[in-house]
Amino acid sequence: MDTRISDEIAVEKRPSYGSFLKSHFRDYGMLLSLLLIMAFFQVVTGGTLLRPLNLTNLILQNSYIVIMALGMLLVIVAGHIDLSVGSVVGFVGGLAAVLMVRYGIDFVTAGIICLVVGGLIGAAQGYWVAYLKVPSFIVTLAGMLVFKGLTLSLLGGQSVGPFPVTFQKLSSGFIPDVFGIDAFSLTSLLLGVVTAAALVYQSMRARANQQQHAVETEPFSFFVLKNALLCVLIVGFAYLLASYRGLPNVLVIMLALVALYAFVTTRTTIGRRVYALGGNAKAAKLSGIKTERLTFLTFVNMGVLAALAGLIFAARLNTATPKAGLGFELDVIAACFIGGASAYGGVGKVTGAVIGAFVMGVMNNGMSILGIGIDYQQVIKGLVLLAAVTADVYNKKKSA
View 1 (cartoon, rainbow, N blue to C red):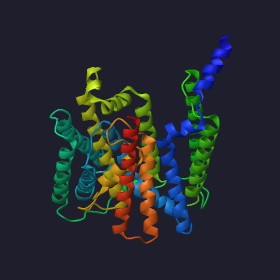
View 2 (spheres, rainbow, N blue to C red):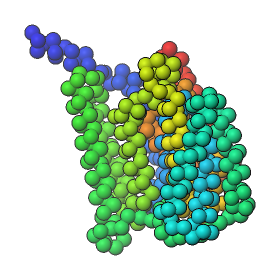
View 3 (tube, rainbow, N blue to C red):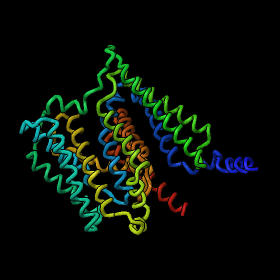
View 4 (cartoon, helix red, strand yellow):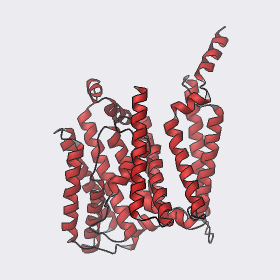
């Protein structure tokens, strides 16, 4: 009798394909959209999009956007916004140039100083938002103007460079191949295989844990298909990069940060509290969460990641310019919203922000290859962002 009851419960816990797709449309829809966009541009560009050289450029062009999107996601989930990140990128890049080029400070010391300055910038803005209750839109809009002006003053209105070669490798360097094979990086391919295997293993453990606690799980065929597709994409991606120069250093940094923030947002207390803060700030405060301190920390985190992005961008350009970071805040915010973050706060995933960033990156890259002007590129990206936020508002009203 007990066995029959447990079997009935298990059947009830097993969702139908339709209901599962409906309840997880946000997650699967964005990944499917990215794959369709990539397939579209692969066809219309005559196969240029997925060539190893272009893939490497795509990573280098979007690594700093992905890094900032991780911090912006937490800010948006907490119910705020940060419009100053682009200006902070430019300011930190200018500071790095002054320290390394003009004063000859080694890149490690200069990099640490820049990250600390980024954290202090985030702390200053976070203090106004968290403790003085000034709306984040106003505080960070003011910050955007302030740091644009400070960048012009710091650089004297001129470009400063070049950077030391060791610093340039932060963005332009590649993982060395320990096997010493010419024209192919076996090390990069093996790292891709190990990464794919680790993700599948983690996914299997998570599914087993859900089943053990009678939590609803995805249909088994979906699970197998998703992981098989994931392995093919990762290994194929690693193979293409290995056939050129291997994995860029910045890709390793980016993946490490993505793994770290995915862990923080899903497995730690502070991650769950950020979501609680964005879902209902008053309820979170009444439950004992120190909402002011949490808001403050999300802006400090954003400042540090913006500083890191500034270092990577400066290393890629090999110079610091007064206009560096112009418009970055729009791409970062758009990446989060396109990736499923809610404009109301409390909703959003790290994987979604990363997918959103690459949706924007692939669109930028593909339209540039096709020769579409920057004017129409902006129009198309604006319409995509509007469609993503409209879908979020529609789902919010429908669920209410």
